[in-house]
Length: 429
Image (cartoon, rainbow, N blue to C red; front, side):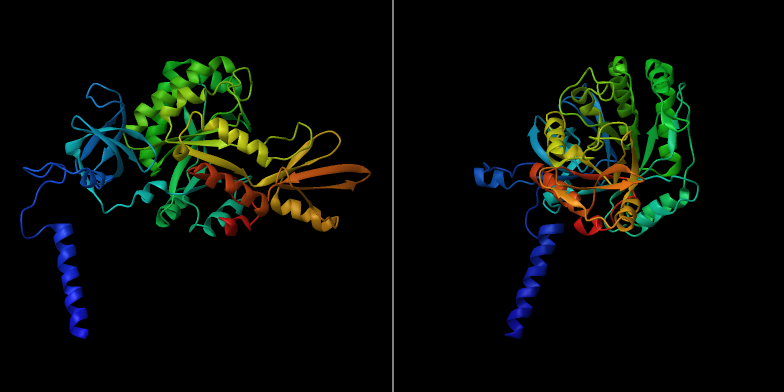
């Protein structure tokens, strides 16, 4: 019995060594057909579906020809999924969900990579501080590095001329790197403390300013160790729609050539809405080819200056996702998740994090209600004779939204913002 087991193990080792490294008998290049043989349909179906880039650098192109546009540069060791082969080219998809064509000789097909490797579930955490030394985001990140795949520090802004400013937290980047977390530099059009229409209008309309902005973003990523950029331009005038698309095209050409991720936070919408002052400037179809990840801000369905209601009703979020999928592939689409709520009185509302909402619940001895259709919690209370209405997000509403991730096979979620959330959401993830 023991001798039989030993013999079996030795046979298996020899088999694996031969299969993986070659040895004994005739060998052939896996990218070429066997000599003097016609491949059967069964063998053809079993051909490798994945490959590893074997050249130092290879250009991913939009079409299987050298004159077509370069969409990305892939470096040695990058894993790709093979979709089809044509005239000496492979159509491939990389682990960021970007598809294109590469020359066959630059990739080595292999069966050692599981196709599931290309469907990594992303949990992106936006990192922001309300005041200098605010510890909440850091505590949330440090406690959940095993779940957060990408960190997005809210540190940088552009001015009208394309000058980039902001403070880099190098220790945070080192901490993320040590835990294997990618880091995206968030770049905004905030001026003072608000998103500025005037700033983004002047920036986008000037090709010189756009070029300077892109150059400074690239230098930032190179010098500080970021994996890519997350563009968060808000309040873009509708008339600047073509210039915003031009910015993403130019940004993509520059950053992808240097192997950096190009991502953006996009306003949620359920239709084209070209008329909308909030979302009309974003032409989903036009900008889709230039983004590696599209983070849909699927929250603020109801907001501080509007009437009370859910921050992100399940029914509304699903409509937002359904529309987004008309233009973005599921593996590029990230669903935004709110980690806060709003407290409205008779005149307006104010944003509250989960801890502040729990304080209200405890102070007024409230039993929150659950809205079965919207799949969010809510409650009301009276303060100094004034009625208040509160809608917010928690672990139960987050769990409900994750059902949409599975239903539509989305790439993952992005949390706005770390330190504001119900701590129980991490158990949901």
